[in-house]
Amino acid sequence: MKELDELILPDDIRYSADHEWARIEDEFAYIGISDFAQDQLGDIVFVDMPEVGDSFDQGDEFGSLESVKAVSEMYMPLSGEVVEINEDLSESPELLNADPYENWIIKIRMEDLEDYDQLLDAEAYLESLEE
Amino acid sequence: MEPVKKTPFYQTHVNLGANMAAFGGYEMPLWYKTGAKQEHLAVIEQAGLFDTSHMALLTIEGKDAFALLQRSFSRDLLRCLGKEHQPLAAGRCAYGVFLLKNGTVLDDAIVYKIHDSMFMLVVNASMGEKVAAHLATYAMDVHIIDYTDRLVKLDVQGRATGKVLQQLLADPAAALDQFVYFSYRGCFEPGKANPAVFTKGGTEILLSRTGYTGEFGVEIFVQPEKALALWQEIMECGAPFGLIPCGLAARDSLRAGAMLPLSHQDIGDWIFGNTPWDFVLPTDENGSFTKEFVGDSAVINEKDKRFTYGFAGFDPRKILPGETSFVADLEGNRIGRILTCTTDMAIHRKGDEIISLIDMGEEEKTTIKGLSCGFVLVDREVEIGQRVSLVSGRRAVEVEIRKEIRPSRTAGMALSKFIALK
Image (tube, each protein chain N blue to C red):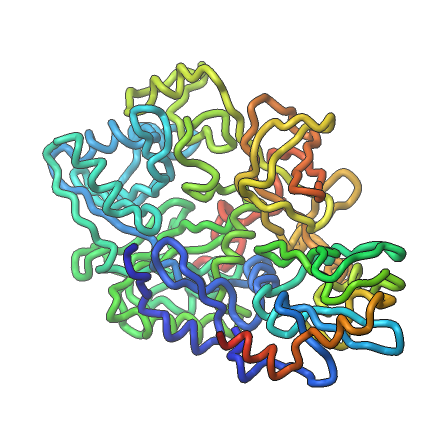
């Protein structure tokens, strides 16, 4: 298991307490899971993703990740409508272990840009993990 | 709550970057940096090294030792060996369960016969005291010793185990001669074995051809003070053959694919019977029991029968056991609960069949994603090949009731399949 100081936590994205991250691009946001989440889960064997067109509120469950041992729900860090899913993950779920930031899970059209400001920056997220 | 114990390998696991968790009262590795998937695959294709020191160990010695086991253990020790139904002999061991009077399972165990009045028992983590206390209630002329803290156990599992042993053992030809499934060499107490088994490094071990992965392999018992040296020696002998350390997650997915139950999860405080493991009951050709033993009448007279089945899914998706999940028939009626659900990473569906990684071409291997598998406990008989649904909240996964899950398992194969014997 990675020590906290070994975790990769890019500072150009924001994190939720549920270990998802969001990166905004205009009115869109890419959503994925943090390095901490993939390390805790271990080998990810299946990614259950929503469908394009599905709408979720911040905090809603939007899919699940299955590792060899566990099934973990993923929760929306932001409200919005799914406009794209990362099809590569259906074929190769292990990409999430290899690079959880390059490999986003869904792309959404954000409902409210201010949602993003409520998320944790890398430093605050790391602090939340230290607790 | 009791404090969580550590095995002698705790620091080794941490140094290897293991993801540790409490299991059976011990801090154990779930997986190492390689990840549970690679560890599972290593055991199928090469070999894995498991720290299983959390398992408990008892010895039973005395005039009534045999009578006590014959009365309390589900196997008939007079006819439990092989197709010929031979009695359990010194140097051999047998798997079975201890039932309570009400027919529920106290624990499963492997019973080793040392000699006519002495046996060794391997039971589950944190169960040593409970099984010893249970056996003491029979008030027979035996002396029961809890050996748990006096021995540690390392399992080497996978088809390369034979080659690893050839490098590891001081005299492999002697130790591996006639080394059939469910036999052992050496003694749990150093200096007592005739003949003893030593590693090249001079460590005395008890070598048992058993395991919990469904694959060819051994369980090695050693004194705690020799534990780290033995780990090192096995790693050095095994590395050329692809042996890697494996954690409990891989052990769990391997055993589920091999249709092996986890005690207190797949068998437990409900009446034993109608399971894939009914072979541990002393049943003859006519369906009658060949001996009387504790729990027998409860098993025979069970009114509200329940049935345990193995299953395999159609992809790696799982629904985990728990209060919020259940098993449903295809009409949506709730028929039972999930006991185990994990992913066997080394199997794949091809038409109606499940095939193992080991039987695939190199290119095909790269496409393998694994299948969910495990056990369900249901209130009605379900035919093999039927489908049921595992449900949790909005998620539902259809699975197939199976008699076997992972094919081409090696556990019981002749040693000569893996190494050239002199």
